[in-house]
Length: 251
Image 1: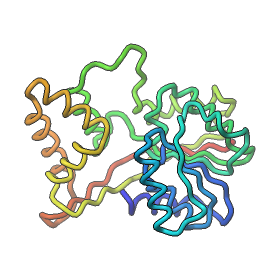
Image 2: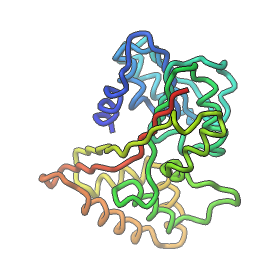
Image 3: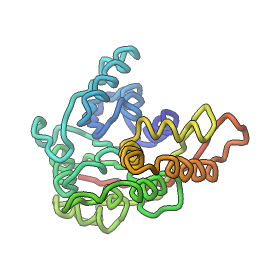
Image 4: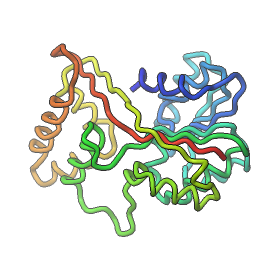
C-alpha cells in the first residue's frame, strides 16, 4: 500500500510546518510521506505493535518531525481543541467503534478553517476490499449487538449525518470516489496469504473458518476474487485497484 499512500498524500497540499494528525495510522503508510513533505506529524493508532513499528520506521528514515503513539479515535482526550491543521485517516478511523464520537473528536481537535480528510471503503462496491469484507463476514460469527459496520463510513448520507452531529453543515463536506492501488510482488494467491496473516477482518474470518472446517473454502473464494481483479500482466505480480470514498471536511 506504500505507493498509493504516497500518491494520496501528495494530493493533500501539505506545506512545511503544517500540524497533522494521522488517525488510525498503522505503521505510517501516509504519516511518513506527510512528514517527508515537511509536516509536523503525529500518528495515532490503537494497536501498540503498529505504533512501535511506525516509530521504528520514522527513526530509520531520520524523520524527527514524525512520531507515533497509542490512542483511540473515538476519545482523543490527550489532545486539546484546535490542535491540528489537518486530520487524515485513510482506512483507519472508519474501523473505530462509536462513529459519531469519532466524527466529533476529529472536528474538536481540528482548528477552525482546518481540514479533515478520510479515505473509507464503500459497502457492496465491486472492487477488492468491499468484496473481501463481504466474503469475510460470511465466514465470521455474527457481530455483537449494537455493532455498526465500518463500511457505513463509505455511505455519503451517513458521513454527512455524523459530521452534522459535530456541528459541520453539509456545505462544508465534499465527496469523491477515488482509487487506491494495491501492488504486491508475488502471485495473487500469495497476496491472499498476506491478508490472512495481517488484515483483521480476514484474520478473524480464517480463525472462525478453521474452527468449523471451512478454511479451505474461504481460501479458494478469496483466491478467485484476487485473481479476477488482478490487472498485472505478469504471473508473479499482483496489481489490484480498489475504489474508496474520499471525504473532505472543512472545520
